[in-house]
Length: 228
Image 1 (cartoon, rainbow, N blue to C red):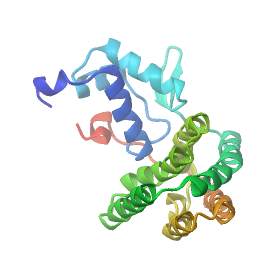
Image 2 (image 1 turned 120 degrees about the vertical axis):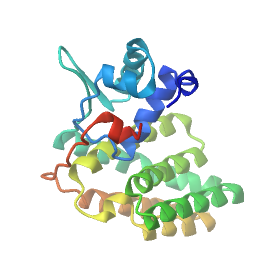
Image 3 (image 1 turned 30 degrees about the vertical axis):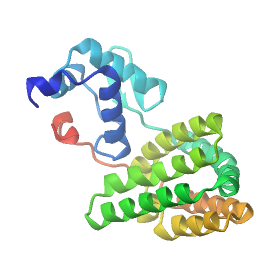
Image 4 (image 1 turned 180 degrees about the vertical axis):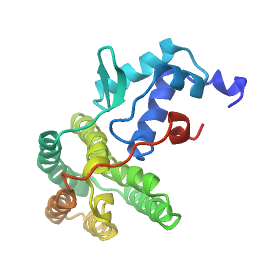
């Protein structure tokens, strides 16, 4: 990173970059986010680093521990169940609303998103595929045109990324392709009842793919994880 690059970083853009790294599992749960190391990686002050970490703590992606520093959050088993129970309450009805409000342009966007997800898998970029899989669900909430619920879904997707990083046991946790394709078919037919049922089953399958005993290794350094 050159000095000119460093000037482009703000607390907001750093928070966004760290959030994506968390979603893509380049920063696994439990990773210590040292202020000095982050400041050096981005070429910014500790004040901006602290602001970025504070923003991520509001989204419950980072835990700020007194006298210990900041860490990527580690959801407990109880929290994992709560998150997926909340998703099971919200997302099926959201899928129903999205099907009713679906447009051809929105369908094209969802299809393009699935293509990008498949491209990432084919290239072996599991982290990017996981990120795109979560974004697919957020796009559905956007199509449903329910902004309050969209905000809740977005936060739940963020928490789900941490849960999957900690507890996944099979590739189904990445959202199996047939589930998303089936949803696309229901959206194309504007079949809200079918879309609602498919989303419900999809989330149940996703929950079943988690192994609450499984933990992932941490990266060797923040620079390595962030690619800086």
